[in-house]
Every structure is written in C-alpha cells, then in structure tokens.
Amino acid sequence: MSDESGSLVIKPGSPREVAFYQLVAGAPLKEPIAELEQFLPKFYGTLQLSGKVGPSGSMHAIEGAENVPENVVLENLAYPFTRPNILDAKLGTALHGPDASGEKAARMTKKAEETTSGATGLRWTGSQTWHAESQTFIQTPREYGYNLTPDGLPGALVRYFPLPSDEVPHIAKPGEVDVREPYTAHALPPSLTARVLLYIDEEVARIEAALSEVELRAVGMSVLIVYEGDADVLRAALDRYEAKRVSRAAKGLAGDDDDSDDDAHLGDSDSESADSNDTDPYASADRRAAKKAPALSVKLIDFAHTWMAKGEGPDQGVLKGIATLRALLNGRLREVVAWIETNDPQHAKAVRELVAARTATGGGSAAAPAGDDKDKHKHHFHLFGKHHNK
Image (cartoon, rainbow, N blue to C red; front, top):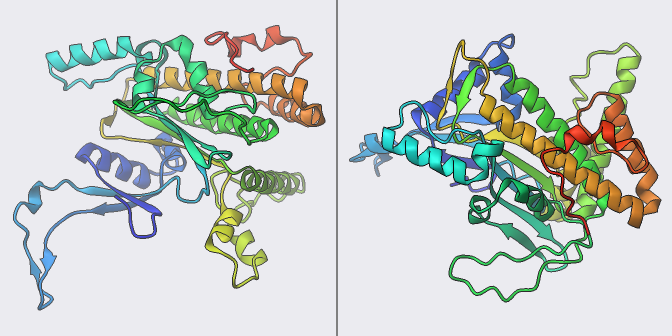
C-alpha cells in the first residue's frame, strides 16, 4: 500500500521489524548500528488502526482493531526514478530463526540447500529491467530465482544488466503459453552500464563494511537495487553525481572539510538543481521528474526476522551473500568492459580510466581492463568463471 503520491510505502510490520527500524533510527552515532541507517529506506514512523471518526467528529472504536498489525511508513525507493530497473535479492544462508519449530527448521534448511541461498548466501527474488524498444519491462519473477543454481547466477545478471547484443528470453507467467520473442536491441549504452556497475558495487562495499561491524542475525533480509533505465536520464544523473564528487574532492584539497552542503550521493534526487534550472512553468511533471531522478539506489529491506546478537559477531551468512553479489557485479563488469573494448572503442579509454581510478583509490573490486594482468584480478571472479556476453 502507498500514499496518494506514491512516494511512501505503508506495509504491515512485525513487532521485531518495527523495533529494528526504531533501534537504528534512535542509535547514538558512535554505535555501529547507527551506520546502517543510511542503507535503509527512510523510516517515517508507524501507523496503528485505533478507530474511526464519526459524523460528530468523535472517535469510535473499530471492532477487532487490536488484531490489525502495526504498519511501518517508509520511503518508496523506486518513486524518484522515471524507469526504475529493480532487483530484489535475499541475503543469508539461514532461512529460519532459532524460534522455528523442528519441522519448519528442517523444511527451511532443505529449501536453502535446494536454492542458491545455502551455497552462496544470495537468492534472486525478482527483477525488472526497462526495454526501450518495446516500451515494457523485462520481468524476472520469483520462480526464476528458486530454480537457479549457483552457476546460473551470472545469467541472472545478464537479465538485469543486458548488453545491446544480448538475447534475454521472455519468462512466461505460470499457466501462460510463451510465444514472445527474446528481448534484443537493448538501448542502454554499455559505457553507462559500466559506470552503474562500478557505483553499485561501491555502495554494496559500504554496506558490507557496515554489516561487518554489527552483531545481528537476519533471516529474510534483502538488498534492493534500483537504477535508472532511461539512458538520457541516467547519463544526466551520473554526470551530476560525478561533478559533485569532483567538487567535494576539490574542497577537501583546499582544506574545507565541511561538505555538509554538498553531500554527493547516488541515491539523492537533485531537487535543488532541477528547481533552479527549470524556469518553464509549463514543463511537464515527467520532465521535471527526469531532471531530479537519481542514478541509482542500494538499500537493505525486510527486517521482520532480524534481531541483535550481542557477543556473537556479524552474520556470516549475510556477509557471504554480500560477497557473492560483489563477485557477480564485478564479473558482469568484466564482461561489459570486454564488450566495450571490442564494439565501442570510442568509449573504451574512458571506461578503462574509470575502472583504473576506482581500483587505485581502493574503491573495491573492479574488472580487469583488457590488456591488464588478469591473474591479479581473478580472485574477484572465482565464484563465477563463465562469461555471458555475446
């Protein structure tokens, strides 16, 4: 459920999920758990059904209201995007908590072993990717993720980050006869896809660092990735973000450490820029939204079965899933860079420089540009050695 504008998500929250959001929001800044707030959807509080207003303005109780669960009010992470490409992936190797019955524990353990959760800590829950030529989204349903093996995970990345020459099969819904041709002629330039992959991995690395410092256990936690699917809007958003990074770095070199007024972040919509530059009172709402759209967002969601585990260390199953995701992202980046080297030499140098700069500054794993000694990079890809570019 959402509000009228679509900018908020209102959903039932278990007592444990409500408590987790409140704990993170109220944690002192020095506590490791406080670092997680920047990686969660904005939390606006809770709503509880208590009664209804009568004709006279007085409040009347609603029978059974006490049985209606409390709702959490969160930002809609897809709302600022014009064509949101969305990926939901479950993290963790455990699919049940310590309070599960013996029967449920056995069933969930078997389920983890039969899916990619047990071996990799990551399960593809679903995704959508904008296909400009058909003006539709390439849908990848939950069932697809259940049937994947670890070796099939890189193929899932192809569905979410397609190259122009990739053929992405349509997946029919249960009971539907699939007669559609594969999706082809993907419009997002690979040079943009490479930038997106680099910055998504950068965000995932920050989440990995934060989770490594927090002693919690999470069953059913997901990472939700969104990136802009319209090529022109995405290019403008990335350019704005990179310009802000350069400006912030220049301030740092000049000794101005106060960057509170220029906090470059990929998930921020650029409302100030759009408001100041758009003087046309007749500009469409879509055009104004496009000018404010962020490049991408990477957040953690779904905390109905998350609890603190003091003295037990971080959740290694969740961290395993994060490591798997980073290996997948960097493996796909390697394929995209190779495609650019062969098919788009005009942008090859710029992409090589971007990847090299990221590696040199310690920004995390990066794909080896063509011509480099790939042996020194191969540890990033040992989980997924197969290539899926065409």
